[in-house]
Every structure is written in C-alpha cells, then in structure tokens.
Length: 601
Image 1 (tube, helix red, strand yellow):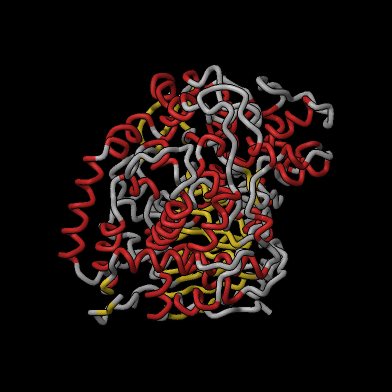
Image 2: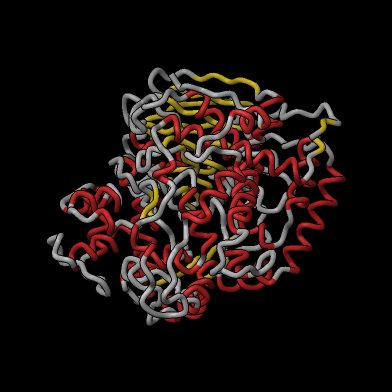
C-alpha cells in the first residue's frame, strides 16, 4: 500500500468521555492507525485491544464502549452510513463488534469524530448529547425505564429533531445479556449484550448532531468509482430485485427448500409452513413501505403496519428466531413480537433461540414452564420478563448457554462461544459451518457469509456439501468482511462488488493507494488482533467448535443425513491463517502484519 497523498483523516478525531468524572478529551487519529485499521470495526477493535486490561468484567466501569465510523461514512459511497459498536461482550467474554445501519453513523462523522470512546459509570441515569464540538452529559432519570420509541421521541424533543439517537430499552438498563442498542427506532446494534454494557454505565442514550462537511481525498475518482458501484448493484438480481422487493426474509423459502431452516431448536431443517412466514407473505399482508439506510440504493428494510400501527421489520433472522425456531407460524404474532423486542431493546436472534432452547428443555421435562413448540401462549409475556429479569425470564435473560447449563443439558444450547447461532443449519453448508466455529465473536453468520457462494451462487456457486477449498474461502470472506466493517459499508454490497471495487472507493476516500490485496491484508490484520484479544481472555482452539447436535445427521429434508465435517477443515484453516496447531498466531504472521503482542496488564 502506497501513500500518494498528504490527505489524512484530519477532520475526524477520537472523542473520549469518562462518565465517572464527567471529563471529555479529544485527540487526533494517527496516520498509522488510519492506514492499518481504517475505522469502524478495525479501529474500535485495535483501541480495545491496546487499552483494555485482560480479565476486565464486561459490566464493570472499566470496560470500554466504542462507537466507530469509517472513511466511507457520510460520503458518496453507497451504504456508507453504518457504525460499529465495539466492546468486550458480557454474553461471550470475547472481543465484540456490532454493526448497525440507519443514520447515526453520518451524524457522528459530520460532528467530526472517527470514534467515541465511553468509559466509567455515570453516578445517575444519563445520556450523552454531542452537538459538533459541544459535549454534554445530561440527566436521563425521566426517560429511564421507558421503551426505545418513547425515549427516542423525548430525547429528540430535548435536543434537536435533526439529531440521531442510539438508545437502550429496559433490557439494557437491567443489564440483560441479550440486550441491544436501537437506532432509528428499529435498527439494532444487536448480539452479544452491547446494550447491557451501555446500561452498566448508567447511559440511556447517545444523541448526536453533526454539521461539518466530510472530506475525501479525490472527489472525481470517488465519483467515478461510485457510479460503477451503483451500476453493479442494479445489475445484480439479489441487490436489485430480491432484497428491495421482499427484504431479507426472501431467504425463508430458499433456505427451507434446501432443508436447512432450523426448526424446533435445530432438531429439524424443514418448517412445514415456511411460505406462511416468508418475505413474500410479509409483502402481501403487512408491508407499508420500504426503508433505506443512509446512502443505500438497495432498500431491504421493511416498515410494516398492523392495526394502523407502524413498526420496523421483521428481518429474516427475526422471522426465523421468533417463528420456525420455536415452531411458530403466526406471521402477525412474529411481527408484533419483533416490535416488542425492539421496544424492549432485545436482540431477536438470541432471544428467539434462547426461547427455543427453553421449549426443548420443557419438552424433555427439565424445565417447568407452560411454553412449548408451536404455541405463542405466554411467549410475549416472557419477552417482558426477560427484559426485566423476572421469574423464568431472569434465567432466559442470560442466554441459551447459561440456561441450558443450569438445567443440566448444555447440549441443548445452539451456540458458539456463548453466542446463539443464526438461521442456517450448518449441516447443510460446510463452509458456513467452519465460519460459525471460527468466528471471533461467537456464533455469527456475518463474519464469513458463506451462504453467498454455497447457496446463492455469489460470486460463484460452490458445492455446499464439499469441504475441499472451504478453509480458503472462509478465510477470504472473513478478511473481506473485517475490511468492509472498517470502511464501514453494508454486507449486502458483497453480492455486487469485488474486492477491487471496495479498494478503489477506499483509495479515493483516503488518499492511500490501496489495492484489493492491501484491503484483504487490512482485514487479516484485524482478524488476528481479535484472535489475540480472545486468547488473552482465555479462549483456545477448544472453543472453535460447534454444538454436538451438528455432528449427528439431519433426519429429513433436502439436507437429510448430512453432518458437519469440521476437523478435516480446521487444520487447513489454521495453516492458511499462519497459526500453529493450537490456533495461536505465529510470530512471523504477527511481524508480517505489524501487530505487537500485548499482555493487557
């Protein structure tokens, strides 16, 4: 990577806020950090790795909560409106980033910040009001306890209607390990309990308004690259037709047809009424209008309406988690339950998966509860109890791993490193299975979205049952995803763009001459830093695995008799990464990537 310009991220600073003593500091972003980690996930992860001592309780004041944007944020780059929320997860204990769209990211960037680092704990419920250079920690006692919609409305009335809000609901306030941070009322920085970290800091919300112009190095070069990028999005059937028309839930029928739509807590791969909860049915029954995040030409978001009430979603993962995972086929109920989760500030994937786990425990006589597969009775109330840590809800609020362990059946939790696995049964997709097992943040489909090549044929179709070549593809997708999350752009652009398209737009934004190879190296560097963080926290190769259920065959459907063949892929994966047989990055790998070892002490 060469530097042909003096352009640095000069209009973006690091904002540090200590809630414990109310101090605020600003510092510049170094050129080296910018060049090697860019922004978003990469920047946040590197700062967390450098600054957080090992062994810190994620819900203690010492943990850091970082909101980070990237060089494409608030520029012409399509989907350049996202923000990464980085912290140590209270649910998994791993390094964690949660990526959210909407319109918050551009406000942070226009206020002049590359990252906001929040530490400490406010003495009373508070919110952070950032209006360009004006930083205030304000009283939030009147909105503490309110749902995310009501709190957002109140905060905008108190600050500026043109500002953007990131807010927690009752779940985050009560430090529920499944809690999310909500923006735009229905966009979630979910997974891993990032909302609980915010709640542990007595921080109800951050509200941001920015008015500064965002600079790029070469506007004409960027304009040309963006024109090509938009044309590619229009030419791709996934980004031009499927996602805009049907939303992400277009996948319900596709995945079910392949026999890998997890049903009844992953005991089966076919749901007998998949069509009834599909994206097609959402369009037919409840769609009010499409929703586009900032700068997005795709518009996969759904605004639905039931009995005159508007609500966001549900997305594919939410449909699955609150539907087939629990054996439920009532689409109206699923849509309302998704809205309830948004109001409470609960991650839908982990919530639905944990409820499905509870249903299995009840079915096996290990848990005394009335909830059961296929029935909605009591589940809506259970979501409320989870958010407020009441009764059985208190057990479920800890996630499926802790729930299943408490009731003597750890194998019933469909999780990796404590994070619930999303809506693709790994027995039907060998590469995706490896991606689940090796994900640095736990069970996650987005670290390496192998559904693209293994199911959707993007960029090319590969045999989903084969293991040969999959370690190389998984590494490639993991590195590219880390780089994309650091620009920060939407994962769905990957259906239409190549690595060189991302590199060209990034070069135009930054002034660095970045090739596709350089971009992948940035992603590889980030991936290794995340690995080092987790090793420092006690994780090892023993955690790079899947629940035992996936090493037994599916009983029926178009993925029947299939199992995951993980061991034969893992050795090659470690070797490709430049790690030893225990999954530890080799010294020469770290030297090549310019990563210093940190003890964290």
